[in-house]
Amino acid sequence: MRESRIAACCLTWRLAASTFNWRGEGAPVQFVIEQADWAIRWVGEHVRDEIEAMAPGSIQTTTVPQRVVDRIVHFGSQYMWLTWGRHMSRSNRYVTSFFHGKPEDGPDVARHIDAFLTSLPRLEKVVTAAGIVEQRLLDWGVPRGKLVRIPIGVDTKAFSPPTSQQRNDARRRHGIPDHVWLVGSFQKDGVGWNDGMEPKLIKGPDIFVASMARLKAKGFPVMAFLTGPARGYVKKGLERHGIPYVHTYASNHLDLVSCYHSLDLYLVTSREEGGPMGLMESMACGIPVVSTPVGMAPDLIRNGETGALVSECSTEAVAESAQLIIEMPSTALKRLSSQAREAVGVADWSVVGRDHWLKVYQPLLLK
Image (cartoon, rainbow, N blue to C red):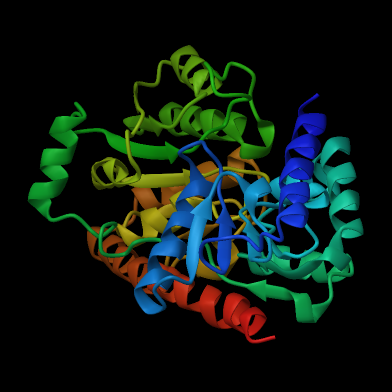
């Protein structure tokens, strides 16, 4: 039913453009974002803001792609591209981001990837963020000339290491006791947008809970800090193991800064990722990260220098690396935090926006 509505909506606008010789309106680049206030929207808005500062009037974001005619259209995810692209005007030139996904993730993902690869002739460029995903796309036959790797970005001015006073204030604001090791997990890892009792195992909520339980069993005073929607599975698991937690939902993206400032450690326990944004935001705030080998983690983490990169998606590996960081001498921990902050500079939004302009949009506009 949704597919037929999208097709009808796009057909209406294509007919209107044809009948009235309408060639579209607005900036030459249209970045399609989601309605939901989440990662795809944030990426599009940051890219737009950076490019508008360099080349005013060049780019807009939109949630109504059916209205776009005779433009460069960048879909914020390959899922959005496959939903809308085949119904839209051939007067546009299309770009999509492809951040994550592999056939091993399940039959639905495998079918989606097959459909994506079939759609390649209609795409001018495919943007991806991580080296492992870039190589995966090349192995699947995406032409080198269509593929551009640009990191998912982070605002390194807003997301910056806290002063001692900022850290103390943040922990008081969120009700964090002084003696606990506060471990962050800022993501959506439940199915849907409600309580999230059904886990999205690809995000590794089971590994997060089991890792926290293992640390507690070893006598470490751990506490979890959760943000985002649909965290019911994780909360129930933490309660089952007697692990205290705080759960908040940031009303806007920058509200997350004080959440990061409260942390001692951040865990990325996913089995598949494009970024995640929590990786870059933690590193920018100087928070030590333990990550499974997913997304941009292998690009940004030098094991033991800018964080901890485990070799497999397992509870044992995550918990052991977390223990090493918890037991790290304060001087070594400060050095790791400083090096993490330095390493993530390649993903500052100013760099990411410039790269979108110079490597994706400007070459297409000059064609």
